[in-house]
Length: 212
Image (cartoon, rainbow, N blue to C red):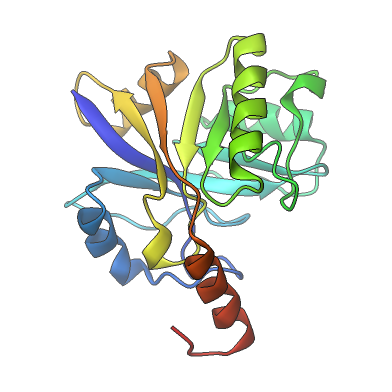
């Protein structure tokens, strides 16, 4: 079976995000997804649901950029060199995914320069700029390194959940099966860039408390 999973979602537990956890299930259903990975900044996942698939995750700020950890709830320190972050994630039961590696505005790590191989590369990130170029470069890097590709919205608002996602081929709809499928490359990143309107909506939330 194929599951549609947004593997990069932030909630209001991240300092720059505005999605209340109470809105997650509705947003997932509205976007036709089967589940999400909750990847708040430097903070382990506490969200659970019996209605959708929830992959526990985290987005760690390494010394050189952001790295997603999927599949565990262990704390990981920030500020370490990316190779050390990847090693720790793997030892704690996460799969390590390089987030938005070629986003000109984001804090990305070039996976081609790493001495420690990550488990996957986020090749489709709806928030990355420029979207098409960053996706192409990330796909080329993943192919050259022969590692799996993932997709995620990098959502900070309910309206952007599912802008990008990953189709994951699984034998059963469990977190363990999803993680194994990602590791084995049974994935297909999908989606599009977040709209300018929603990017402006996020900016307005930063500038004007209570803005929607």
